[in-house]
Amino acid sequence: MLPVTGDILQKNLKIVYKPSKTFRLDTDQKRIVDMTDGLEAIRQSVYCILNTERFEWLIYSWNYGTELNDLFGKSAGFVKAKVKKRIREALKQDDRITEVNSFSFEMSKRSLHVTFTVHSLWGEIEAEKEVKI
Image (tube, rainbow, N blue to C red):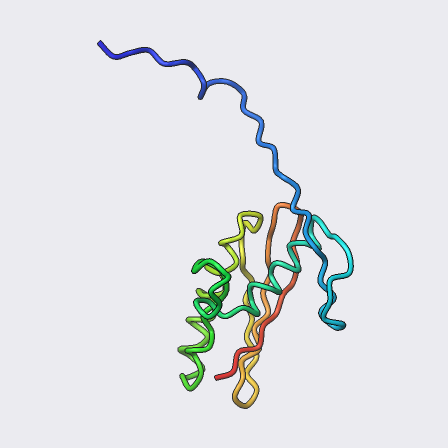
């Protein structure tokens, strides 16, 4: 005979999201100026993730940042395939981001300009990253 457990899974559960309040960075002046929350906090998180090389900084978890430096010297076709996957995986580590799609690529000399859409719990933003190849 199996024990009967409570009906915890059958009750109406309400998911409550914690605020994503964080310090607001002024990237032009290179200083912290205020606090931010919501979509602006997502925009800042995307900026920080894309500009942090994964495994390079001991202060960050191995799940934080992107792996783009090892693409230098590779062919444009190879880089396009890898960049899309690596950016998506890096940004999806943030649980506020639900999807990353609509990638477009523009090649110029030895760099690849990538633009894409980031969908989050608070809305969507357009983001971009330039990768040296």
